[in-house]
Image (cartoon, rainbow, N blue to C red):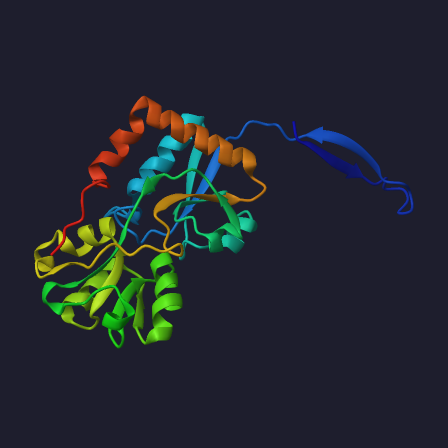
Length: 263
């Protein structure tokens, strides 16, 4: 049981001693407020009815149902809204890659699902995800993503031109039009946005998977460091979803385990 000291000062005298009485903070949780940035389909986006949809939304709602609490979704401009998390505008950030840089600010739950990162461009470009190949080339990334952080830290100083976009639709249009030479993307996102569409037939994954600690290899839920009870509750609920088979039912349509195509 967590104990909080509630202090009341007698109103008759500012100089009077402050009397403190213990109170408990063990009321059951009634709500979890998840933050998302709704520009990353198929993980989180808005449909034609302006409703939040996607894998992270489905998983978050299932976790809340498992915990018998209400799910509230807070749509953020950027995923990495750590000051807003600390300011208690919401309780957790849904679907974020745990990295050492991010762990300085927050704690993470167990992994929700894995992901891989690939370079994507025209099949005939001959580009590879190396500094030698990409020097002087224009690489598109999604604004505020872990891929943007990686590209700006690791590639930009070596002469790779990094272009940031708010939406995958904008990014893929730029790639098809030739305004950028390649994009650094998660395999699931870029399949939906380009490779599995008619206009994506001339494009493919270029070179091997790009692996780095800055990128991460899976998504989790970020919580404030002191919120150990929330983290434990979410981990327990996630394990229960896996054991019941509900987790597999939710993730199966998103083809997370589909092997990436190669040239």
